[in-house]
Length: 242
Image 1 (cartoon, rainbow, N blue to C red):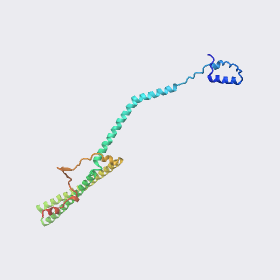
Image 2 (image 1 turned 90 degrees about the horizontal axis):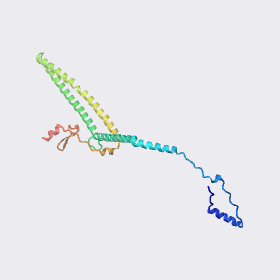
Image 3 (image 1 turned 60 degrees about the vertical axis):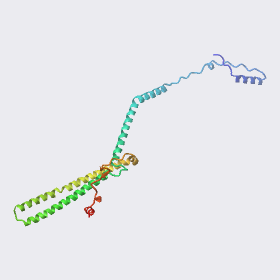
């Protein structure tokens, strides 16, 4: 290795110093030591950890592109299937109770069943009342007849009337069972209202209205039988012909 050549700034400084001393030249610079002439040591960095980390990232990327990506697509399909089922459930709920529908199917069913109970009860009471009148007439006639064939047949008629009374007990059973059905409908109605409260009402308003279950005669809807408040009495009908 040769002696390092001084920089221009060092030469200018040495010249100024020499001129300041009256032209006395400075002693020659000492030769650099062999140690100073050696090149700086080369530092070798250990990049094995960095390479291992890069390799691990590459393995994860490969796994994502092969295995994990397939799992993600499967999850997306399952989520889409769940979303479709939720939408179908909303449509079914809207068919039962649509916010914009003019009729409430649960309320209508409850009213109809309640009307069945009342009509059955009224018909049963009418049958029992008529049977009681027949029984009174039979007893009156039997008391006027002597013992014989006619009196025996009237006695048989009393037994028939008794069977009518026993058959009229059906009203109590059917009334209890229909009441249980109404209670079940009320329970279902509450559950439907609970499910609808989970979502916003606007979501159901955007769904199509359910078809009407009322029968139609051309363009007229038949809502019969009419409720008691909508019925016309026989006196009103007779007044039309007067």
